[in-house]
Amino acid sequence: MKKIILLATILLTSFTMNAQTKVFRGTSSYSSDVICNLNNGKVYKKTTSYSSDLICNINGSKVYKGKRSYSSDVLYNVS
Image 1 (cartoon, rainbow, N blue to C red):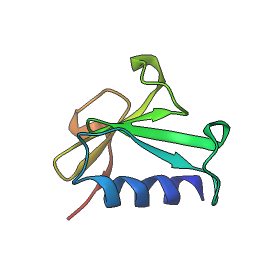
Image 2: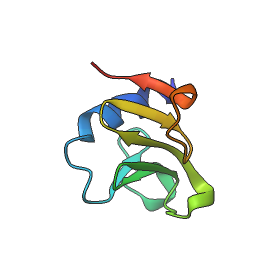
Image 3: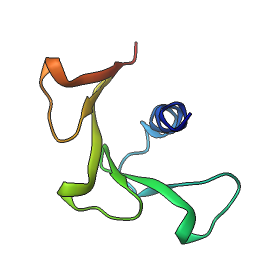
Image 4: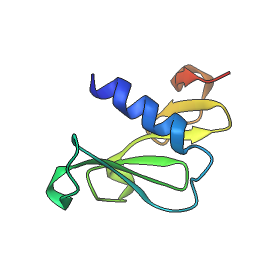
């Protein structure tokens, strides 16, 4: 379920990746309920933006695992 929410959020915000976007649990807007945040084409855990907390990154129409951008690390390909 979390992967579906994350993927939907990535797809919906892929065109507005210049600003930081926070993804909240349910209908909450409390900072303690942040699931992840998106910043410059990268998805980080909770509210951090440390490279060690990087979940995945987006390059073009592909979503890659962690910091990597190798073809073997593609999680999703959006066409």
